[in-house]
Amino acid sequence: MDSDWVFNLNCTAKPTQTSKYFDENIIPKEFYDNVIKRNKIGLFNDIKKNPRLVIEITTFYFNTLFFYFNQYKSTKFGMPFKIKWELINDQKITMNFYELVLFYQYITIRKSFASNFGYMLSMVFNYLTLLKQALTLIKKKEDPCCYYYLATNITNKDQFLLFIRQFIIT
Image (cartoon, rainbow, N blue to C red; front, side, top):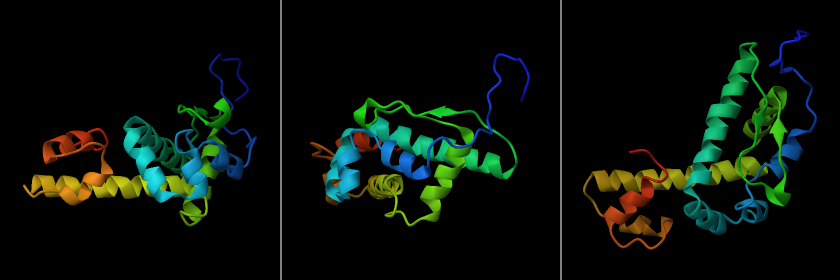
């Protein structure tokens, strides 16, 4: 990639930071304290207040990390990626292709509770699974009242369905 073309990006650049650095620093500001303390209830409360952030995190995991890892396995390259959510200490982090691949390996090879980002992902997936179970009850015309604690200020299943639609496309 030694051309003079304007859009020449060195996609095979060596990592500038370790995966451990990214694991500690790309946790969203809203979730940071509860992830570091491993506070499941507090993290669930943060998740229910930030549906857009949950969508950004899951999109980052599936559409960026997983995709780039598959690109790497098939000897293709990708572009650098800028973390879009607000980080602790107002940092701006951009990860190159190889850092994204190494970070994906870092969080998937370890148990989910061993890395901060892996823990946060497992709690987000737990929360979304519970919402999916409640959605199944609603579709079966049953009352999902035992799942109302997953939302804020919910008194009936119509309100709960609207809340679920912020997270899950039905």
